[in-house]
Length: 115
Image (cartoon, rainbow, N blue to C red; front, side, top):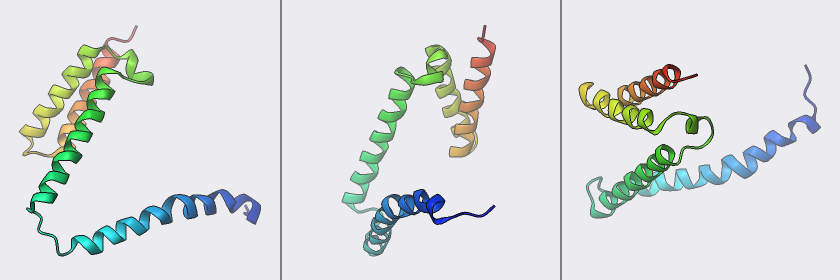
């Protein structure tokens, strides 16, 4: 298989318009954050805001589920969240364990209630 220039232009656009502009800000943030104290008041605030935004996105996905997730009953979605939290706590605050537990409960609940 031979790729010509006309077949590669979408990838070039992705790199130039998507990857490079974001990468510049990542490197700038990395350079500027080297001397910042992790426990400074501003970073504590930034972490709190980031956590709140993430919680809001998750709540929106649970209560106003899009696409295929909307076919799963709200009760199953709420039980999956609770199970994920329990998995997180039981496995020494492992995010992976919490996500895997919640996802497993969600999938099993959806399959069990499938017509």
